[in-house]
Length: 291
Figure 1 (cartoon, rainbow, N blue to C red):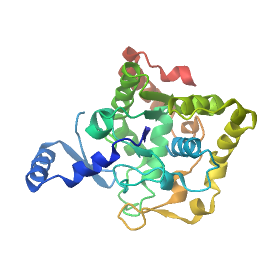
Figure 2 (cartoon, helix red, strand yellow):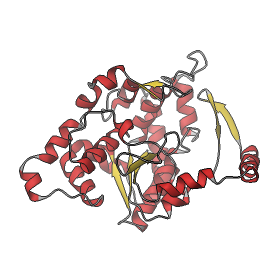
Figure 3 (tube, rainbow, N blue to C red):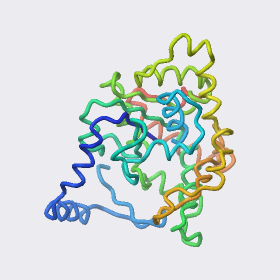
Figure 4 (cartoon, helix red, strand yellow):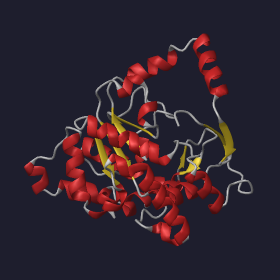
């Protein structure tokens, strides 16, 4: 559930944050205090309105170069990183479409969204979150407890299915502005997806670049094997000066389609598939067609 945005009017977003006066802060604090909340995942999650690979590919397409650094250092998150002057015109977010700041959602900038089979999403999320330094292993939910929370939509980015549905509908309404990608499709034919991504971002590959094998070079430099074996990935720490410090290696686990089979029981898998069918079938998007 990742989305990468072309930088346009990012400065406006920074100004929005700076212009919040004390009365505004109090207003939003009062709103938050009224929202339903649950203490779980070693944090407090409020209910409001109900990927690393993509970053690497987008960055390599824009710069037309092999990626030799950590993807999250190239494309900052609007929620936690300083984005006033990014090196390349890309920023990222885990926010739902309806939660995007007006300076992004209303700017006309390009939005690229990637989703994945929820069964693999849950397993990846459960493993990833426990790597943060603030997490106490003794209090962290078991796989079964985490599964229940996921099914109930109690995760940091909001309910999975609503998150996917918002971007899917946006991609149908604004196809020239919102590109909806599926991880499983990218794994099956990465070259075709990279060409499609470059075209959408207005950085299309020329015939000469394709003849020289640039697309394949980008795919190779952004592969799981290449990125996970970078020295900065093996030895670095992301957000090292904050409570969200986490080893950069934690962003790379397996990157396999169907790894959920090694963790979920058939009953758990059937339950997630049933929820997915109920939540998304009416929208015209079918996860099961992308396996």
